[in-house]
Length: 305
Ligand code: NAD
Image (cartoon, rainbow, N blue to C red; front, side):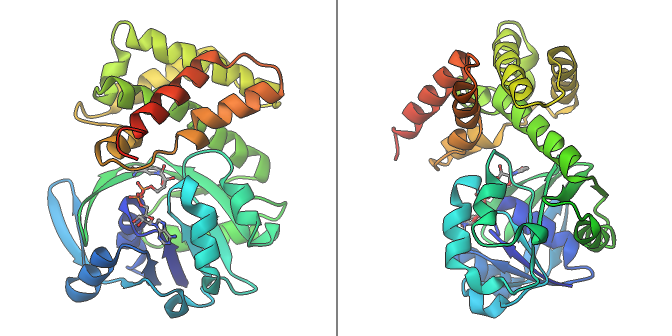
């Protein structure tokens, strides 16, 4: 399969390390140093202390990745529209576009450029971080869940087969179930991601006294918002899932928003807690805790933006 990965940062590079085993993979990014390093010396992937070098192609010019069979969008959610606008050449009439990004509204952004029947949405617990140009740390993870935006699952199954061939476990769900899974990840992000950044703690520390109360307050609000949109969630199950997640993390783990703040990058707050605030207000569900978090994170961004 001819696969273009739009956004060759941590997740894009990590997944390229797998997909390059069986597919014609090209990374597309505006980060010139990274692109040049991959083309010159290959992409180094560190996983559990071991390092391998793989050789996907890499480019800043979308013409080099014209008419791909599959485009995997791995820019930050706040960058999706601009990135697709600048890289329309990747999209042929039959190109499938897959998003495993975090946050709310990625599907709406992609639909501005791609017909619904070619859009595949999903989520993953896989994680990665950049060590430097041409060098990514694969932090591991177990699953990728994907599903169609429309009714037909067959294109999502095609993408899943391409992933499975390279050792990436991938489940395919119908359109409704995949939306539930995306919401589930959104709500866990809304409870944990910003709180770790604001408090400057390790993610597992959220399970401790006081902070666990704070994340439960955020979770309770988000669950009420989700229920207002017909999602079949219940608060107790979510808190249990979140506690299990925190217990499974290595003690040095930090959330992506913590990393964004530390690297002085714009965060995805408006697509996480900010989305819960907008959605909650539209249905008259109280969202004060999430709104406070949004203000605090924007105020932290203001220190460098
Ligand atoms: P990242 O910041 O490491 O990578 C994003 C890349 O997109 C950067 O290399 C950037 O240069 C590139 N980019 C930005 N604008 C572009 C444009 N116009 N054209 C081409 N490239 C452009 O981000 P990440 O950590 O890989 O996260 C990507 C998405 O995956 C986010 O939604 C994130 O929340 C989600 N996610 C991340 C992790 C993780 O562990 N890092 C885990 C699960 C999900």
